[in-house]
Image 1 (cartoon, one colour):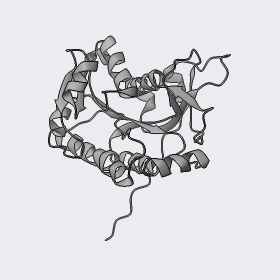
Image 2 (tube, one colour; image 1 turned 60 degrees about the horizontal axis):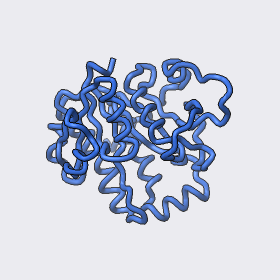
Image 3 (tube, helix red, strand yellow; image 1 turned 135 degrees about the vertical axis):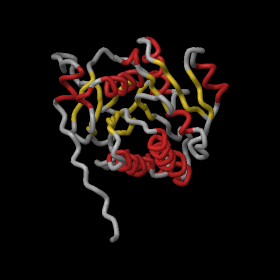
Image 4 (cartoon, one colour; image 1 turned 90 degrees about the vertical axis):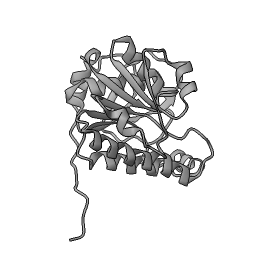
Length: 244
């Protein structure tokens, strides 16, 4: 039950992370966020949410954010477009490196739910265009996935479909299809937030990387979250080579 847990969210001042924070508070979980802009965070989150001020590029307070945290949801990313590859690397990739280091320092033993994207392993014209406009974002997102898989922490990597602000009645399909970045493979931000929340709630989601998109046809049922997660295969972790 998440109402007895403390969930740290990095990237909760807007978008999917904000939706996840609201969902968790609604069911009684203690929510703590790590945010660069404290006034902005306080505008969108109520007083029951704990805010730790800090910057992923200067992460002195990250270990403090992990103290007593049971799980982590990481949705932080550069929203500016166009942007440089250096900004993506220093904010997202290096930010995850600092986050994992802080988690180790704090003795964190929970699950990390990471918001990734479809298209990271299946390039097409859309992903190439996104990489050109947004500093090779998908290349670095895949590198972040590798960091998490090799970290030794429990995790769920959610490769969300094309993110939309709209809400749909269609069920969310979880698969390991490795979709290309296409508009037909979409998901609402609230729906993606629900997948992230369920991926820390359900033991069956552990050590898995999967796509999350709206089911294209509304007929039929995808089953419970536990059933959907159980139907996914655990990742095969290949240890990084080291020089002896």
